[in-house]
Amino acid sequence: MAVKIAPSLRSALERLKHAGAVNGVCLAWRRQVLVNLLPYEDFRADKLMHSLHDAHEHFAGGGREVQTFWFGYEGVHVLALRRGECSLLVLHSRAFEADFIAKAGEVLLDDCQLLIDAALNPSGSNSDSGDTRRLNGDGLHGDEGGTYLVPRTGI
Amino acid sequence: MITADPSALSAELKRFQICDGNIVGDTSEEDATHFAADFQGLRHFGQKIGAALELGPPWMGAFREADFTHLWAYEGLGLSANDPGNGAVIARHAPLMELLENVSAE
Image (cartoon, rainbow over all chains, first blue to last red; front, side):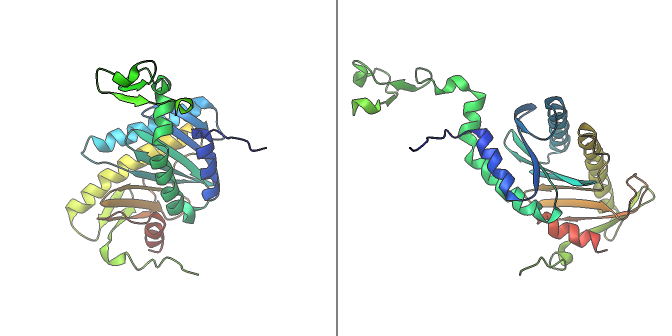
């Protein structure tokens, strides 16, 4: 029997661990941690993302838009990527894998924008809100020219 | 097997030496001043990030913009601001590992 696996940010980030010797991954929006898959407690992930956000703001103050930070520590490297207001931080062991992990992380950030939006706006999936309206009753004759969702059962 | 050629970027690099807390560059004093400012900022945030995870200070730091890449690394075991190291900048989005190999080869 086929099992339907719902896509999620967590599973997307788990896949990034196949990019190399990855020791942990953390995704944040601004200063807010969305998913912490680091081998550290949440309060440390919060502190980490605050420092990373401060670093971005420091350089942005001088008109610089830093896309990537990379630091080497004893035994591990920290690679931090930025797309818009989302930050992806990866702990990895081998320096020579940094460029591939960065590429894979950038693709992940691009591909996961919808999942990130859903995580930030859980009520956004409610079709009764915004410009998207569910088709029901005499909805075919909507008065505002909005976009209608047609239920699969109604086709 | 294809390996990165550390000499491929060499012609475009501006190189700097970190020595006794001073930055010495191969180009202009203005370049050295800019590198020093970026080095200090990057090292500061590298220390904060390292402190968050109890990793200690960084031995290497880099940042990359769309058209600029900056990297530095200490030469030996010393990790303080006065320990010797090397750095480089390049006016493009450069591969991090290739840049690290260039800087470490000095």
